[in-house]
Amino acid sequence: MSARYVPRRPMHDANMRELPPVDPARIEHSAQSFQPMLQDATRIISRLTERSFVIPLMTAAQAGHQQEVDRMIKTAAGASRAHAKYTPSGIVITVEPTNANESCCNLSMTLRWGI
View (cartoon, rainbow, N blue to C red):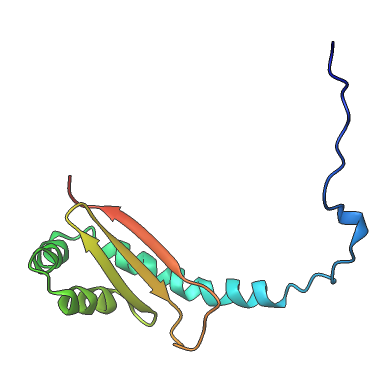
């Protein structure tokens, strides 16, 4: 006995429901807010190529001095808000818009620095 093939219809058909018109305003705002954050992230990355910055940063992280790590990252960032989370194997730096009430976007960078 062979099984009879019965085609299945999708549960939701895109043509069955009406979607609102697209509104690019929010993503345009996010992209505009993201550009200065990207510039500040570039400044952070540039500082992370300098041993005179990285050695004290890693030393503070190894000692568990979160406030010092954040202070150093914020100093390197410029105008954007920035903070870091770290483990023995790496650091995650998050850059956020200058305005603390802005929730449009953020930029996270993950960099390895250990085993």
